[in-house]
Each structure stands twice: as structure tokens, then as C-alpha cells.
Image 1: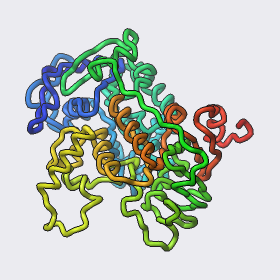
Image 2: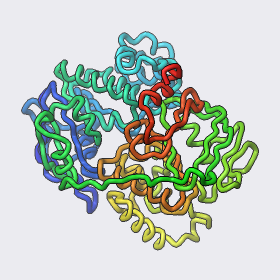
Image 3: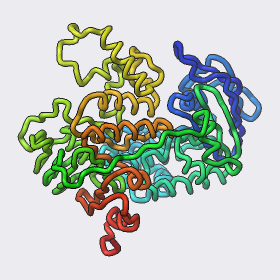
Image 4: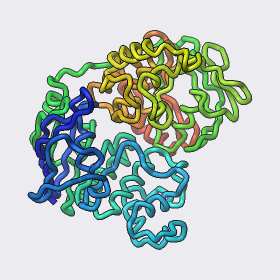
Length: 497
């Protein structure tokens, strides 16, 4: 299937999301679609998937214009899309979710899910370790995304759109994904890979297209371009801010003490966690997805109740068993899935940005001042589009991440818990996010930074602690840290550390 977008334009109020975009997507090739957050990439692909209707322009398949009034119409034509925001039903099992999306499933899903031929084939290719009978609510985010991919590939897909598919995957999972993408393309299926990672481009892309502020600003074969050239197209020049964490005093008293903490969360259990973070220190938490990272973050932010231990700030106990949480702005939290855990999707951006300070009754709030404060924060944190009245659920994943950062990092917390803080962010926005975290560290804030990007942890953190099966497998300085040693901790191979 040869697909073309011809002169696509789409406006949302004052925002021109797509501006006369024309793009060819040939079969059997992988097209990496790059661009800053808010550049219009997701809007363009949602038009192709039938979720949004363009104001002008056509979608052309094999030389014939087609109408795409709905995702169902797009799927009937062989167009499938995997989104950043997951659509699985958490209360159902992996098998049941795959069955619900498969047209061959009998109408009684409970028993019929086991009789659908080939239902689990793609899942075994992508994620052989995922238990098909596990409830989705118990899976880490990386495995949830893999199930989403298997769900779409189970359909007769001739064009596959992947929206930031490697954003939450470990290195090994990303390599498996890249291999699968190449295999899919080799069967004549076209693939559009929306990504911010140049590693994705190098690993599996045949072609690269770059969007900036709604326009298509460049296209090239991946083999004929390099990182500096892509950066020039992405941001208009090749200057990207550099960031670094300043040295921290080792003899400083801990500002944060996560003392012998054990807790149970939806995605795992942590046991006997003991970590101390000095003022101004950035402590990185490494580990393969599903080893308790989410539970640790929730416990440190007061979201999950502690079964044992305590979290203290400057000697004051904030969280402990049978103790009423005492956050009061002392802990800022950037969770892994902002749309689920950090915002009210159907509330306005202004209200979401004011959630920390809404103490009075709703009808007593100065709404004009709320809108003005929101506009100022959105400008500082580059949230696009900067419309205080817009609902949070309408933002792209990267802009939603920046919205939460604008609320959480605009105060004076003692601790910042940052889970994958650059997930879904482009190169420029990632650098800005790191710069803000490190600026807060310079002011004396302690930062607990959870990431699966070992390169970034080694480059920016002061120390790295590794979580394995809910316990701390080891802690070391980030500068001279051995990648092999950390890898051994991450996989439980202590004998090789």
C-alpha cells in the first residue's frame, strides 16, 4: 500500500497544527517522523488514522483519494496505530484485551479468548516474558506498551503508525522492538515511527521526515543524514543547551532519608529500601522495568502507603505506617504516566496548574488570577498550545509532561521525585527539563531520578542505585561507575559485579 498525504492543514482555534503538509509513505520502508513537542506530528498521524478530520487536503492510497471518517474506517483499509496513551482495559487480562480487539474473537470473550487462532503469536515475538493471563493493571508500563503493539499487529495491518514506541522501553526491549520493526517492513508493510530518539532513527529507519511548528521542513534518507543535520532541522540550528549537575558535598547531612521502606503497589513490591540523599544531590535509580520503580516513587511521594519504614525530610517524618501524610508541598512528583496519575484529563490547564494551591471553595477562587498564573507558567515551561482554558486531555504527551513539570517544579520542594521526566520530550525540551532539575538541586533540593536510560544516568547523576526485584542491588558513584557492574546488578548477576 502506497500512501500519500496531500496538502494537509488543520487548525485548532488560533493554533495551526498542520500547515500544508504533503508526505509520501511507501510500502516496505520505515519512516521516522521527528519534531519538537507540539510540532504537529501526532495531529498529522491522527488525521491518517481517522481520529481527526483535516480542514483541507487529502489522504491518497494507491493513487486514489479516500475518506477516513473514523479509526474503524482506517483499520478497514489496513492502517493501525499504537498510541503513547494506552487503551488497554486494566481490569482484564492481556489475553482478554488482545481478544477484544480481534475481529475473529467469539462474542463470549471469557471462554472465546483461548480459542482465537494466533492470538498470542505477536505477543510472543515482542514480549515473550509477558504472562498472557496477567491482569494489565499489574504490568509495568514497558510491558503494557508491548501488549498495545501486539494488539495492533494482530489485525491485517498494511501501514503501522508507532507513537514514541521506545520511550518507556529498556535497552534490551528497544533492540527487540527495532528488530521487529525491520521484520515488519521486510514483509512489505509501511511503518511510521514518531520518535524523539535519534537511536531509533539509526537503528531501524529508512527515511526521516522532520516537522517544525506545523510544517514539514525536511525529508531525507536516514543513511544520508547525521545527528547534527537532524538537530538543525529540528530546532532551526545546531545549538542545543548543555546541562550538568554540579558536585555535591559528600559530608552533608542527608536532606532525604528513605529509611528501611517496604511497600506494596499495583506494579510491584519494594522491600527494605534505605537511601539517603544529600542537599543538592541527584540520585539516579536504574533497573529493568517491573522491579519496583513505580512503587518506590509512589511511596516517596506519599501516594502509596508504607508497610514499613519512613520517609523523612530535614529530620521530619513525612510518611510512615499509620501516619497521616504531611507533604504540604515538600515533595514534588513527576510520575511515569501523567495522564493517569498527575492531571484531571477533563479539567482545564489552568485548574490543573492550580491543584497544589486550591485550598478554598471553588466559587471563591479568583479565576482571572488563576488564568494569568497558568499563562505565565505555560510560557516559562513552553507548554503548547498556551491556552489556559483547554482541557488537559487534548495535549500531546510531551506537552502534558511539561504541564505537570510546570506545576510541580514552580514551588520550593525539598525533594523532587522524577520518573522518566523526559519521556516524550524532544531534544530541546529534554535539555530544558534536565536544566530545571539541576537548577533546583543547586538551590539545595534533593532529586530522586528514576530512569531506564543508563547513558543519561551515568552522564548526569551523582550516584546510581539499582533496583532488582524490589530491593536495592547496589549503589555506586555515577562518574567512575562500571557499566558492566551496573548491568550485573540490574540482571541479578552479582557474581559478575
